[in-house]
Length: 285
Image (cartoon, rainbow, N blue to C red; front, side, top):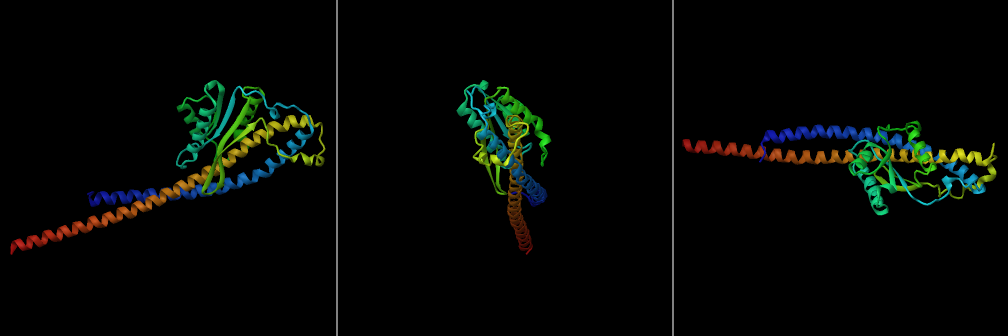
């Protein structure tokens, strides 16, 4: 059995850990609240630009490559992960899904490439020897579009230049503070504009619909990447909050168990001392 000093030391260290995880939980909760609001605030812009693009595309025979399927020779996978751990299964769930998809769809590294947002995703790809063409790490907890504009623009340009023929994105969708869902969507070619074209009569285009479409389509694709990042960041902070809450609860349970062990050991020591004193008195008699 561990000594009283050892048990007391474990109790003290666990209490310190509990304070740290409790503080980290509160920090993550604050970040999650702001990130969730950022994601919600971005939705109206995303919906409006989709409406305008759909309106033009439904009435214009543009043949734009971003709206046209072509033979798939190479696929791009954009993955969004965190830059750190302590977020439960947030990173591993996305990476497992990406890796499984690659294993099922491809037999050669020449058939795909990866664009990684987040250190954990980048390091995973390097460890598994997966081809990474572009990456960015150190993204802010509350990212601005400028933070990833270059990466988003270059990724979309890869499709335009036919370096890739499809672009898929993998990230954690924020459902609630206790639930995040791994999500994968095809970003390019754009195939899911919906039926917003019925609102075409609301708009008058200058200089021309075709010219505006050339500008809006890349912006729309980039906005989808940014929107997924905002969604992913809200999920990341929620996962961190949940993980730290679980760690705090586990620390509390451990403290309770150690305190019980400490009291039992202390009681046993006292009983032993009484027994020894009683035995000594009996021997003197």
